[in-house]
Structures are given as C-alpha cells and as structure tokens.
Length: 313
Image 1 (tube, rainbow, N blue to C red):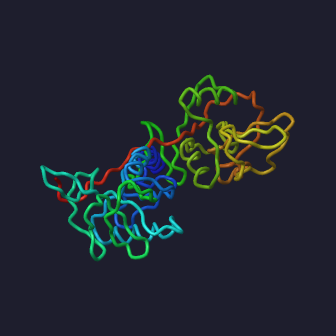
Image 2 (spheres, rainbow, N blue to C red):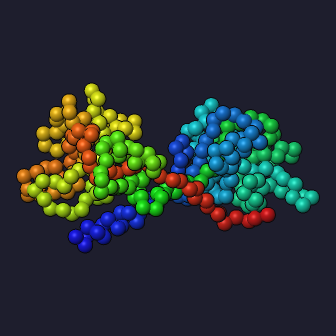
Image 3 (spheres, rainbow, N blue to C red):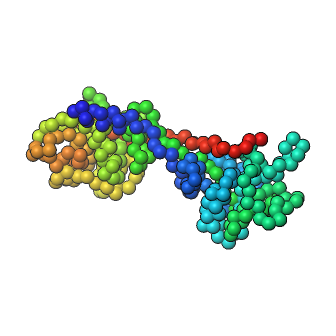
C-alpha cells in the first residue's frame, strides 16, 4: 500500500514535461532550448523579421561555427531551388559608428563566416549561402527565404493534474459521493476546461489506472470509472480523437443496444473470478451512476528562453 501511495504521489507531482520544439520546427543539436523555423516564402529582411515575431521568435543569430553548419543543413532541405537565406545580422548605426549586430538579440557579431570579399559596401543585411554556408552582405529589400529562431516549449499541468510525456496532456480524477451518469461526467470535465479521458495507448491506459486505483482487492472489481468512449453504431471518443486503441475485458464489448457507454475497472484481485477486468474496459448503460471519472486536457506551454554567452552592445 505504501508503495502504491509513493507511486501515486510521484505521478501527481510530475506536472512538468521536458522541453520540446513546436511543430514544424527543427531542434538544434547544439542547444535543447533552441528551435529553427525555416520559412520558404521569400520576404524582405524586415518582412522576414515581422513573420518571425508573429511565430514567437526572431531572425536567427549565428554565434558559432556549429550553428552556422546546422543552419546550412536545415536550409538545404527546406529551400530547394534557392541559393541563400536571411539570418538576423544587420549593419547598424551604433553611437555614430556602424557595426554588424545580431539585431534583435542586442549583440555584436563576433563569430563570422564571410565569403571572400565580404562584407561588401552598401549592403546592410546578412544572407547565408546554402551551398557553403558563407555569409554575404545583401540588399535588405531583396526577398529571400529565411530561418527564425524560436524557443523550445516546456509543457506543464495545473496544480493537481498529472502530466504524461507520451501525449503531452494532463489528467485528473474527479469523484462525487452522489455519483453521475455519462453525460454528468462530461459536464464535470467541461466545467474544468477538459473532456472525459480518451485512451490511445498502453501508457495512457496505465495513467488512468494509476490515477483511479485504490488498491482494493475484491473478487468483483470495484465500481468503474467513466471514460469518454460511447457507441452509436460505432465506437467514438467524445473528444473527437480516433478510436485506435482498445483494452476490453473478457466478453466485452457486449449488449450494445442497452450498454452503449464505457467504464474502466482499476481495482480487483489478480486471482478472483473477474481478474481479467483489472485495468480493462466494460460497457455500461450511459444512465448508470458511477462515482469517478478521469478528465483530460491539453498541457499548458511556456517558452524556454536561452541566454547565450555573447558580447552585448
């Protein structure tokens, strides 16, 4: 019992996930907090920065050779047919003298990989060649593809909710002494900005079990827990996600003409008559009164910002 309580405490205490890059971005191999977002649509330097800001980042700075090589690799895949792309370097008037800066990171350019004869006079924005990753000073008004640097995201759950890294979702069991039917479970979850749990993997099924088990040892499993699966000619989850996983107990699903909603059995004994129902699903009448359900919602996200060691203005 103590072992179970410690497991449950650790599960619920884990409300933060690991940083990961947003969809459509490429994680840096150099820093886990940095993500590259290539945009193929040609834009001027100023337009490119505006688009990067709208996506939560800035035109990418290049602080070292490793990053320069990474960007060349990303661009080679993302920009077929193009010769170069914008990064965030610009010649800027700094206290009455001109200096090359990583404009939106307030840092002077120290590392560089200028092509022979560069930077050329009269051109104030940096583009990088895709073939050799050499830098060229270019006319800022020329439209080119570009790469944004956006921060990785950390996923976290509200207090009392448990986080599952596999799904990047949050889960919580709710209970009532008076109980509720299937629709009541849906309303309860809706009141907490969530849906009745849908289950799509062994990991998610285990999560529901860990949140709801009492460690009770009975021949007949303790009264079940509503999950968000119901039947109307075919099975579907109330949150609209696909029905692509199942964990039915023996002889289930059955009696679908009268038992068209689904509950989860978290408890029982491993040697009783109904041992095959432990951590399994069973059909029930949608009007049945159960005392527990598990709700599920998207995790919150917070940007993970990196402060590189660079020379500031």
